[in-house]
Image 1 (cartoon, helix red, strand yellow):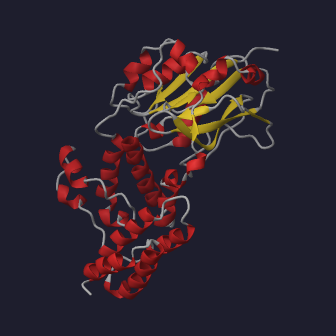
Image 2 (cartoon, rainbow, N blue to C red):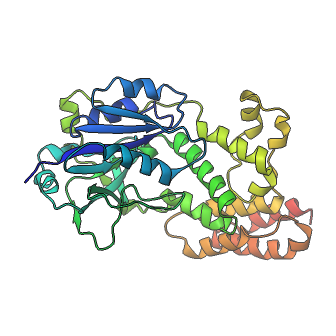
Image 3 (cartoon, rainbow, N blue to C red):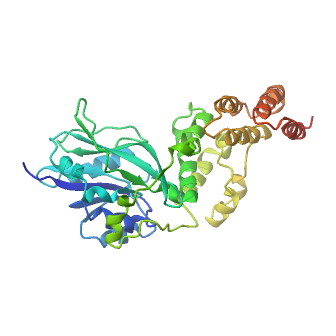
Length: 366
């Protein structure tokens, strides 16, 4: 049987914090690494150009364009002749280093054309000692199938109907997004704003749950990282445990653009106001930085506190109450009675009724 060419497909936008590590690791298993850079301004392109296996292509589109970038990566990969095994990873994702010794690697290389390859994706917790499971990512023994996907969170490779799937158990994909909590939060804030703008019927509470899912992980879902996941990388002098932390993130500037284009009031029901947007706008040179001030009503602030207090893994009743509260209108006075009932219920469920009732009375001037 013809041996496939192993091709790594990776979209990039401002990933200098981790790109060097990613390309060192991917160079150990990929024959080619196709990097589609979308107007990076942090040196990502120069990092990619240092690696012999990288084929760098430019994604010049200014808007967020997941399907288009996948199409771009696929088109470039299909210029490579012969049998192609496609493995699509973001720059903060790494195969566990046990691919070197696992029989699954050879099984994957020998699978039939048109087979999907399914990897468990595991999130690496800050501290680099534990992980938890979160879904699956796919590779594909390419048969030239067409690709389609939604504008956001689209599949990485074609997903032909009735395609056979090889589910790997030993080789996993390690996701490093959560190793830098500040960077992760910047990205989650942007996602919430993007989805609100492009899907205005989506509930703010549902957006909150979707992008705060990491707080619902139970303690028994955390597992120690096996040494085999890192050891082959260590043997090649690749550091897998440090984190290069940045002080500013491009997603926050994009959020300021959302505020400028749509007005801050549209985003008042999103719990994104822990960031000092006025100071950030001044640093980024925006005129009239005061327009980025927190637009929330007192009731919306209460609803956001409720969402934060209910985001743990074992409080389903409190979650329902908080979700109800987060949908209240911005005008406080017509909804004061509703807000009082909501927050009293919330307070009882969270074992702080007297203190919370006092805060509510002061907030409403009762």
